[in-house]
Image (cartoon, rainbow, N blue to C red; front, side, top):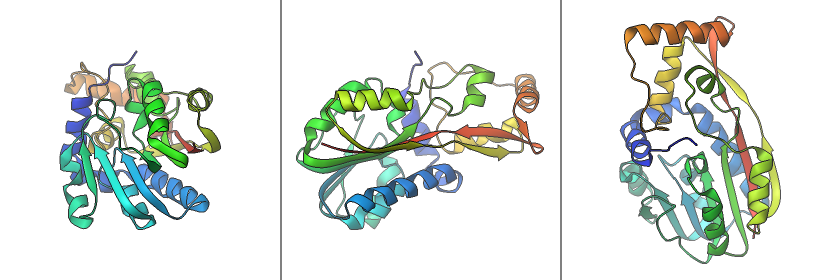
Length: 250
């Protein structure tokens, strides 16, 4: 099992919040898609809770659809300073979502690109279900087993992502009614393995393990060569994203 250093995750997202908006093009695409699917089913919510709001890609879109309380959560308060300036009515709950109380009587819980970091997702799903009002919605995106497959193959590092079927089983086990679920894969192109590592650093997604590889010039050169040998395409190298999407109801 991969060890998730949540403090490192929080620190790296916080440190890279300035570059995140520019670099996180896939996360923006994912957020836009999830938002469109949410409002196809319901355009107005009274009390919403967002897990892992980060710099606010989803927050900024869905805020206008929430008439009452909108509570946002993140590990790192630095991520939300700008959000709170833009939307003073937001209520912010800082901390690890697995260890803090959830707001209750919600009619919407949302999250994008976050739940793959959880250590006990089954327990969290149970708590989310209990926090929702009857007919309340739970909508989220996460990532599937092919996500960052290149990094897993070359470095033997990365998260253990659940498959679509594994997610469906856990969600239905915890009482959720599945309204829709879908997935896709996209190969992003970069100039080199070094450029891939920089992209991952600038989007804060390289905090998976407590003891990661120590890089030097020789190791980096070998990494670039192996990346080019195994994952080249159109004179570039690939990095695969594999998002999963779920729309659910209590």
